[in-house]
Image 1 (cartoon, rainbow, N blue to C red):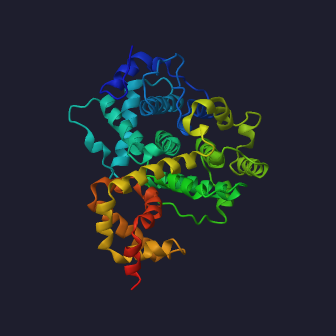
Image 2: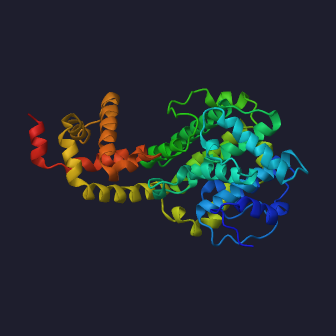
Image 3: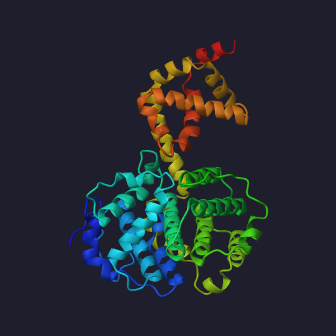
Length: 397
């Protein structure tokens, strides 16, 4: 039976054929390691929590992510509520997302009055997956955004156990993730200019909070004292390792940091003698994962983005120069940025004025899309090269 996850009705069709084949896990750890093996965290889906093989050769990466996200939620549901079938799962997962929608999130409004529960869930999953489907994000892998999808899984688990969910849970998990990422990048032996960009890419995947690069000095000590569910602790460990993997290797000091983090997260008894699933996955699939074939996946994003922006600037050169000529303060600041570091206030002015210009040039409106802010530094880099010298000299007066 051929299933198209981009066409309406795919969940009902998939459920009729495969719901009984979704694996029923016995423990939280077996469920989590199976989630790792699917590849969802790492942006390369290879498995779907199924006892049976399924032909996914005709699916694109987004469609694979939809299916694995659906089966992950259902597998977790079966772990928490054994013997409950697809109908009760649909009711509970929709109630879960309805609870989130009460906090002024709009995706529930997409439902049609006659939508079935399965169709409503299709809309929800498409909304969650599509945070990464814009012109900008296609220059990077699904690694970051799809990893953050697991926050929904953690929240669903919390909802099933407690019967309630609020934004505080999402915010706390996201803040812990970003703090772990920041600390992990500080530990790295081979620091690169792309580490800051990696932070920004993770930050762009956040839905409910904003990232602060000031990590509390007592963060790890506080983390050790908190009562955090084992799934969340395992996920934080994975997020740390994903940050360390950003340069394609882990040094001895980084391995020592991971070992210490395992103790802090109280996972030493759980993960002992199991190895690290992320290492196994990367080594097994490296040759088939496009972004891992690059020496540095974030550099791959950066290089592709440079090419895209260079083309946009060339094609819109005259219009861009016209807009810049009406914003002399911006040009002065851009010239200054090539010689010295701008102050925080100056950077805010540059960003605001550039975004205003982007609004007036249709081809540059991609910078206004979700994630567009990540590419503004590249736009700033190219503009001084674009300005005629006479134009610059006039600004000196």
